[in-house]
Length: 197
Image (cartoon, rainbow, N blue to C red; front, top):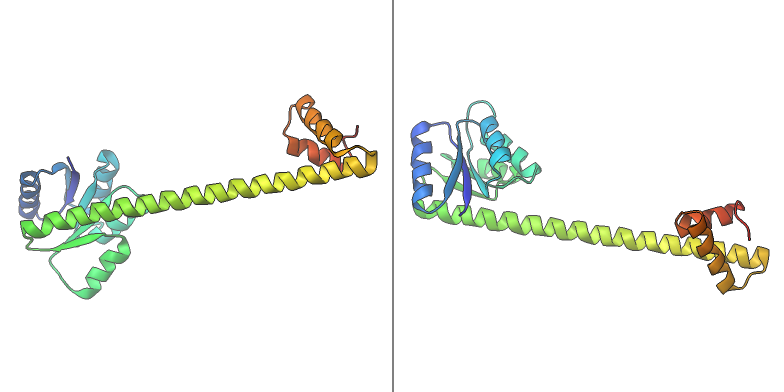
C-alpha cells in the first residue's frame, strides 16, 4: 500500500484529501498543517509520497519540498490553488515531481501521485547507479596507482639490488606479509630506501 503524508493548512481540504486518498487505496500515515510538521512527519514515517500545499503558514510547501527532496526522503506532489507558470516552475525547481491544482479532482490526484513516485524511483536509481559507477572508477584508479607503485618498487629492487623480476616480487610480497602491511606500503618503503633485501 502506498504511504502518504498530507500537508494542507485548511482543515476541510485536508480532511477531503485524506478521505479521497483512503478511498483510492492509499495509506495516509500523517497529516500536517504546515511545512515544518510535514518535514517532521516525512522523516518519522518515511512515506512514498508527500502531498504539500504550496501556501501554508510558517514553512511553506516549496521550502518543505526542497528539504524533503534534498534529503531524498520521499517523492513530492505540490497542491496549489494557483496554476500560474511561475509557481509551477518554482515547484519544479524545489524538486516537486508533480502538482495538482485545487479544487482537485480524484482523477487528477491519483495520476499525479503515481507519476511523482515513479519519477522519484527513477531519480533515486539513477543516482545510485552513478554513485556505484564513481565507486568502481575510483577503485580501478586506486588499483592502477598501486600497480604502478609495485612496478616502481620492483624496478628499484631489480636495478639497485640486481634481483630478477620474480625475486623482486617475492621480496615485495614477503616484506608486506612480515610487516603486516599492504604491498603498496611495502613498495613505498622500498622506493624510499627504507626497506632492502
